[in-house]
Length: 608
Ligand SMILES: *[C@@H]1O[C@H](CO)[C@@H](O)[C@H](O)[C@H]1NC(C)=O
Image (cartoon, rainbow, N blue to C red; front, side):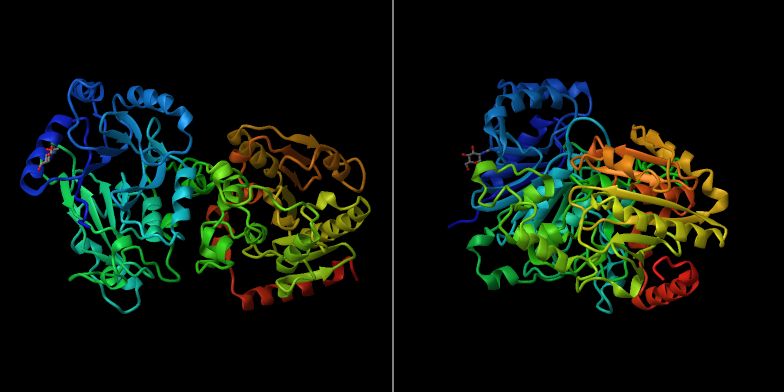
């Protein structure tokens, strides 16, 4: 079998005439070529370019070679591509390109497909946080590609528009082994974090393609091959310039790769001269890619008080319950990134996965493969005894579970116990937890409310002696592993601002609370029970004066799982602590803090 011959092109910008002229001359000298793949913006920057493009797209000029493009934005994209989408609307899930006209195929969203025996993965468009308009990739697109990382089939070619972020610091990150730091070879602009997309870096590091092509800021950059951390093959990254760029940088690149599936393991493993370590390698203790790089467009407005404008990270991961599942953890039961993983490690999802439930279905609530999917699209029944038993065993919060963090426990009552929070927002951040495995405190009988109120009262008195008030909040969501009512002490001086902070946050997210004043010594729990239908997600917070704000979440997409914590981080001016993963302590320190708390709390402890 002869290897296919492929041409890859950078941003076309509608300049098809110039492109095909070049293709023809390269074809004549080195061809014939089988296909042309285009990365970067395909459509022109200004309406001036539209006429030339239309000639081709409307069939007045022939497209001489099968051509696939990903950069589905620019002038004219909406017009031509919405027509194409409509034409193909009944084609369902199709990843090998939608036909725009003869020989021209649009790679929409993300996907993988076989082309001339090569296995090709692509992510079309730009990141949502970078711009608005046509040609954006979504969370789902990224999620679908992440699935690939576990696929046994090696991806030959990966096409993206934005550049991956390379790490200049990679030499020092890989403990002693020196590799060529990327800045030594990367031209200016390639290593500039402002023009790269950390999501692409993550994907490239996980998918480990043999070739990765991207459009760039009019720079041609063929990086030395790099070794994938665990992969057996090397990756060659090539950034391509734009057609007709002023600097006459290379925009057309020819390759003739033997498809991985017909290569011997030894050939695949071959390390060409000059191979470096992976530019994406992150050793322990270093900040993961997504946390480090700020994208243009991030707003710092109100950042000291309010974080909703900042977290592009969350926007990328947001799933049904606010965060994407980690595929690695769900499929294997462990993930080397542990708590540094930006994806959710969910024991219940793992359980479902073991029962042959589809990962897409667990992660997104839907699976595009529909009836063709070989995995189940039904969760095992609630109350399935095996399931209940299993998840209790693996639960961090069940007192009977071997996974419970017993060193954090403060005291234990009849139905509730009290423990210090892991990754606390502030010192003495406490959790009130049901002893039995249950998803919400409101699902416990109202008899147990008396005990809960006892705990709350004791905490209020205890903290008041230290000049602090307490905010209690709980987020009830369907797949919550185990109910936890959070108790966060705040300085008395901030107490009167708490309602305003929660109000401000709600306004930003576009909702209103139900506001309740307590009418008896059980607080507002009866009213909360009435409001909570067990179906929609539900948030409530009890302020220092007993006022309770509640909200039945209407739009799950818009409501962050860590809402309460984020508001309080804003109120307390500790925005960086909004993510509990930034606040982790060692076990020894945790034990010391719990010990200290137990001593101080002793005389208030309602269980004694
Ligand atoms: C490439 O060359 C072959 C012959 O070598 C020819 O048949 C084909 O049409 C050429 N394609 C392009 C795009 O010029």
